[in-house]
Amino acid sequence: MLEEYLVTDMAADAMERQSLTDIASAKPLSYGIVKRTADLTSPALAKRLGREAGVYVTFDAPPSALFSDRALRSLANHLAGALVGLTGVQGAGSRVLAVGLGNDEIAADRLGDAAVKLLRVTPASAQGGKRRRVRLSAFSAGVEGVTGIRTVEVVEGVCSRVRPSCVIAIDSLATASPSRLGTSFQLTTAGITPSGGLGAGRAPVCRAALGVPVIGIGVPLVLSLRTALSDLVRDYAAATGRDADEFAARRLIGESDLSSLVVAPKDVASKVERAARVIADAVNIAFGEQ
Image 1 (cartoon, helix red, strand yellow):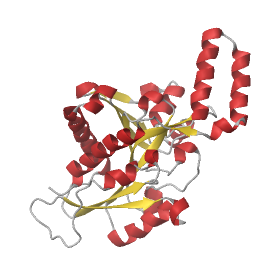
Image 2 (cartoon, rainbow, N blue to C red; image 1 turned 60 degrees about the vertical axis):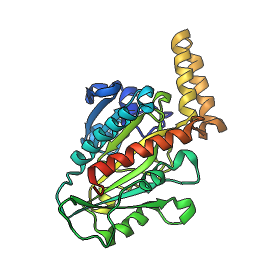
Image 3 (cartoon, one colour; image 1 turned 180 degrees about the vertical axis):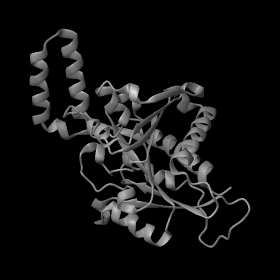
């Protein structure tokens, strides 16, 4: 079982905490980017890591790559290739529905909305042409706290009319590692559970709910203060050998109001802008209008 204080959407975080990083195959790419692929389709393994069963592909980029146009284009191309591979959608006549999740009024939670606004969608009136591979549609689903409707029900309603071959759900994620904030991109066939990493318990946007393949794609933009403080206590205990203090401090953290707080980097707006552009470029390369 995962440690109870670990709050994350990232499969890579969970594997590191369980010392199971060898599950993922690592492939160095250009500009210092590393692609990690983990097959967690085994229900037992997924449960051990606290994840939904599926294939998880993570692209970790060094901070320097995020300030290089060439590196960002390369990253977008790698993401596009992963999207095509995970969805299996290539043939003409297929339809892809991209859905932006999250609250666009909160800086750290507007990744999904920002990304779908940059997509080159196929006009509903457009006829088939030689250059059209798939039809791309997109919309922002909003959040239950604003609409009063569960996100999965909103997406399900659109799917019933649009009848897509697959759904791409884009959302901000939570991480347990400060170094991953704004620099890691996770794709998974398990779909996405809105606010799942923060323990909000929303209904998942996944294949079981929608009846079609769902690829979740996101970037970690928030960090649980409970996780950050617990890690600090762990590292301090390891350095000083004061294990008794470690457990006492963890208990205090869990009982305090601090344990429910979530923090974002001060430059979160620029991180969202860059991440949204990379994701949108990737979806456009894979499925967008040419």
